[in-house]
Length: 95
Image (cartoon, helix red, strand yellow):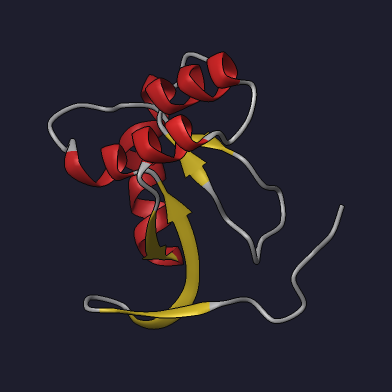
């Protein structure tokens, strides 16, 4: 497993300068119900997650195809927002 020695950072409007993380747009747009939180990296400096629907699309495509990338529509968030999204969406993860 490769780890990032210098994590990428982002400036969050709520949390200031933080380590950056990647999530799917569904986790940002859907707030009235959990959509799943499938984590794709164990490296603490490279946090990535997407929802259950994105996981199904990824498995169907068998790769990060163009169709998958379009469906996922990745977004950069800070690590604090990532943790908040995990708390909101992880309970629905079924895959």
